[in-house]
Every structure is written in structure tokens, then in C-alpha cells.
Length: 384
Image (tube, rainbow, N blue to C red):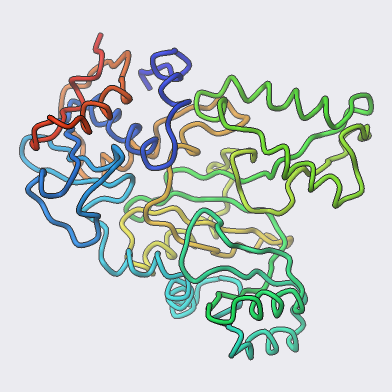
């Protein structure tokens, strides 16, 4: 990798980016480095292109074209024109995803649809011995509306409080959560999600250990500026009978996450070399089952080492793969794999990029008098 992301010209940009813009930044940066032409647009009309799975207009710098002079591909974040309609529809509807996983006999938590008017599945799972459940909206992303470790009564309470809404109900599986990124049937990166926590040393309080941990995060170009979720951490502490002044014993773990849903306070530990062959194959099969060319597969490994697929995301953020935390193994594996998968060996001149002013690109893209032909990303890059 011929780039130092700790340099201010890159780290300052990354600290200000979020979501799909951060993903678009990494993909366009890799494409520029490979000598490819990258152009950002405000709308499909400006690009003289029309794709039914993409929005017609954009208010963020996430829609761009990459070209090698002979062929071109359009991207919207990590989703490209190689994304099939079947993959898009399946990914947006968690129930369809689960049905496809079941149809292909892939490991996924038992579950299905429930509502206030039909909660027979809840009764069936309870009779089968399931005592803890996950309930989530049938559509959505980023953990919005997901409730974990729910009792049967808590599930009923949710359904009765929302009588007009259907939910996806699943058995709750205890284990380690991880995400595998698959490109063209190949796992290219994976990380384990470790919820917010501190590790005791027998001397310092939770407050001190927590402050030290987040001071260390400032080194990371991407996670360094992410806010600390003090409120949720305090709720987690109180729910477990602890306080900020508690002094944990040596190697005692104190969890500061009220639930196991990943957020910006979690650690993202790279694990691809240690990932079992069973988990790798399951991730690839999950991507194939929803006809996804590239996607992130959220998984969980139970106490016996058996992997299960939780979700498949075709427009996933990729920056957590590039800037894992607390590891300093910064990499461009995922964006490089994505660009190569679309353009082959990329027999173009490699360029040394020493800066890429994405904020200026965004400003230029959305200025009122900007011509419709788009904005070339290379005009905002600095080359050695």
C-alpha cells in the first residue's frame, strides 16, 4: 500500500466523513491511484445513465462513475451497477433474505414474521425451548429498531404497542459477532465486533480505563473523531450494578454496551486469517443465495464454533474494514478488491496520491452553477 493514512491530508478528511460518503471516498481514492478516471454526479440524468436500483438524484457525494477508457461502471457507495435487482430486493427485506437462506439450507437463526395479529411463531419457538429472542423491523439497516435478548413477554409487549407493524422474529444466539466482506465469491476481509468495554487492571476505575481506551482511539484516522456514547455506557453500567468509580480486577471485563448491536464505540478486530473454512464458505454461500456480486455478511459464531448468518448487506459501509480498531493494520483491501473485480488486472499506470480533498470535491459538485457533466475526482487529488 503506497499511502499513509495518518498523514493530515488523509486523516483530517476521514474524520469528517460518515457512512456512504466515506465508502465513496475510499473507492474513488483507490481508483485514482490505479490510474482510472473517476467522475462524481448529482443525478443519473447528469450522468446520462439510468439504473432502477439507484436514486435519481443525490444530495451527498456518493454517486460516481469509474472508467478505464474502454469500459465504465457506476457506483452508489459500495453498490455498483453489477448489483442485481434480486440482490437489492432481498437485502432490503430481511424476511426475503431469511427465506432465501433457509431455501439454500444455510445456517441462520430460526425465525420468521410476527405481528400483533399473528404471533404463532413466537409460541412455536417457545414450545421448542427458545427463551430469548431477537425482534427487528422487516426493513432497515444499521441496527435501527433491533431488540436483543428479549423474553417472550417483551416480544408480545412490542407487538401490542405496534399493532400495525410486522416484525422479523429470531431465536437469540449467544456468541461472537463478525462481518465478512465478499467480492465475487471471495472473502476479502473480516472483522469481529467487540462491544464497548474496559479490561480491568486492579488499580484504575472504569472511568479512567474508559478514558484511556478512547484516548487511544484518537490515533485511528477514521474512528478517532467518533463520539463516545457516554449515556448508553452509563445505562449499561447501572443495569449491571456497576458505577464509573468501580475498580475491576485484573483481566475483569466490564461491558459498557447496553446491547450487542455494533456502534462507533465498538472494536473491530481483523480476523480473516483466523476465520474457519466453514465460516468462509457460509459467507460466500450467503452472498450467492441473494445473487449479490459484493456484500457484507453479518454472522455470529456460537459457543460450539458453528457460524450463523444474521444479515446480508449489499450497500455496506467498508471503512471499518480499512481502519479496524484498535488495530493499526490500516488497509485498502476491500476497495481494491472491488475496483479490481470490476476492471480486472487494471493495466493502468499506478499513481502516488499524497492528498485527496473530498470536502472541496463535494462543495464543487453541489454548487448552484456546477455544469451537469459532473466533477472529476482527480482534480482534487495531489500526486507525487
